[in-house]
Length: 179
Length: 407
Image 1: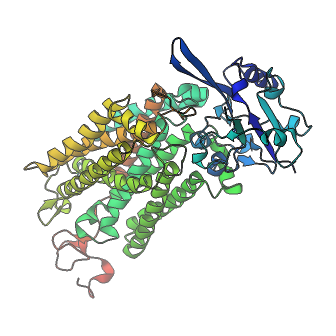
Image 2: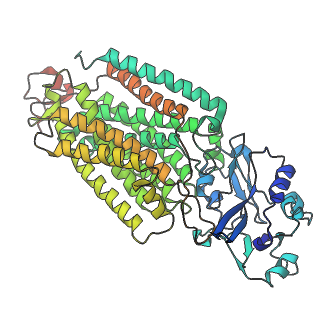
């Protein structure tokens, strides 16, 4: 059984949002919904300025607070680590939305809090999901954390990484390259 | 039957509120989240606050009622049936409000077949369900005059109320992602604020019920009117609430813990400050405390006014509690210099549903007043004992105990 992970090198991101649009196309989302997004922050004062960009999406946490709080196990974690939602079981209480420290959830038109699925249909075939394959700078790299020879593990051995708000105890599966 | 109060006025008022509530409910059912002031950053809105308001009221009513029929403080025995009936009704209308809030209320059947034991909302459903059933049994045995069983169920209600309600605090307290809520404080605070709600609502209720007959003997115990006694409880719980609020604010400010500090500042000087200072602090705590604690403060009319102010304050307190936990955006970048607040509002439908639920509670309560005798039965008000044989009044003499009793 694979154990999926994702490495994001935010320093390569140009902010073109192709990943967001590719995700919307692949998942057939309406314009107001998107499962990945770019958080942006301006730093400095003109002319010494820069825009910091952070690609964000569901972290598929090992200690996923959304799955822990879901009253009906509508949100569940698969053995490979992917966190999914069973629409039929969701009561629409939005507890997962308040529990997520990453704002990963978005309420869809059916009042189900949806989120990034890491597209298991692609990962299982050994392909990169749309957000990664569409990116001109290869900001994202999905892979199997359990396979020592996976591209992901090779890259992880070369770079220093950090995670977003690990102090919330979520044990996220997304690693970010330290600048 | 004793003429209690102006029934017609209350019926018209509650009918108007219910009609408004139905309109709001239809809008929410048809248009879903678009009819609510919530969004992806603030998923819990006024209906969650409204739900909390109702179930806090329910818990408070039964906790205060337990003073009399569980802990045998004779003074409070008179509030029994009215408080328990009120407790059932506020709980049921709390369920109505949350039922409208939920996207898929009928999927709640999965609470039974696919329960998640680590979810506080699962426990909330289970415990409040048990609590409701126990309350109904308690009221039933009260009506039957079976004091042994009603006391037993009163005790079970007391225990389940504490369990269900502190667990409701944990629904918020378990959320590590929300620093303003996270921790054990919410569970403790919910129990305390239930006692505050309970004494405020009972003060208002018994003032209105006894309004046309201020000398009615069953409300007076050792020369003190029940509303006066409730007013003293209210003053005590107001004092404790102030103490809790002060320490919540000070610990939030001290050391500026990320997320918590900003949420407290949103209450003190940010977008929630008008609500916090004017309604929660001034109207909800300081004014009623002054009204009660100045000379003559426990006169029943002043207790009534203090109770009304407190209930309004508590309602806004619930709105603030839900809003403050979500108003601060999650921080993904280190060293951001300014706080941008998450925006949310209260839609007309949300207001209407809450008001409709209040109307529904009032209307069904009136039905209860009309259909049932909610006064203390078989208790001699003069001697304050059940089945009193010193009285000539037949009402107080139980048929089977006439020969072998005296307390």
